[in-house]
Image (cartoon, rainbow, N blue to C red; front, side, top):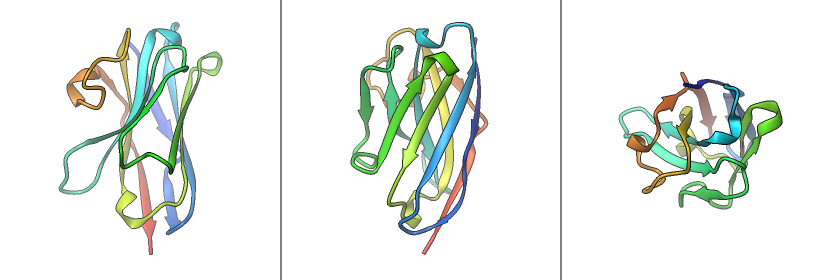
Length: 126
């Protein structure tokens, strides 16, 4: 089992940047495929980015490509999501997720991830 704790959300203006952090309480950070999802009000949870156990392979959803960067620091038990050029449509609750072992397919299916954090709110105003 792994506990996930997100931080770094907040309110920014259009064009601004935020970096989300996720600290994982686990002895084996490198064992987990980890990623980020988000959920806007009235919408389904949407997968954004995922990273394999050793952090070498990153996968992005189309909505995240070019603006968001996922990174993993196993030594610090941390997962990050750098978000640039934010727009109001990025307003959502952002969740850190994890799955034991290799990343599954489809990689942005909610059912692939056993562990979810409580979320951190991101609000982008125009």
